[in-house]
Image 1 (cartoon, helix red, strand yellow):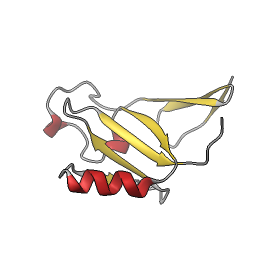
Image 2: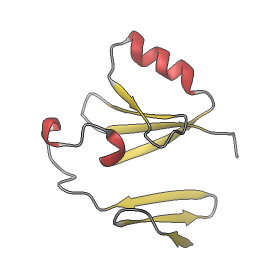
Image 3: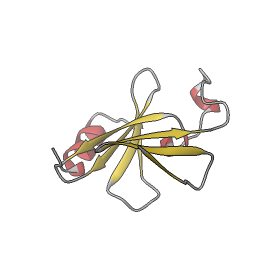
Image 4: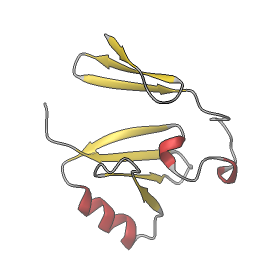
Length: 96
């Protein structure tokens, strides 16, 4: 297991082929969405890999689910589930 430095307080841990990102963010447990960061990449979230991000974009748009694209330029996006949890989806090559 190795750690990588990030441009904010936290750690990026490699656990074999898997990654765990731990980020220190202000007020990450606010129950009020309006007090949480509008861009999900700055909020606590889970990241899921997808083969192609376009079908997800079409589904979110068809269901009027707001989302933001990753500010990194990667083919990734962030949206909130009905309980206001942030979900990141990133387009990635199959690796398993």
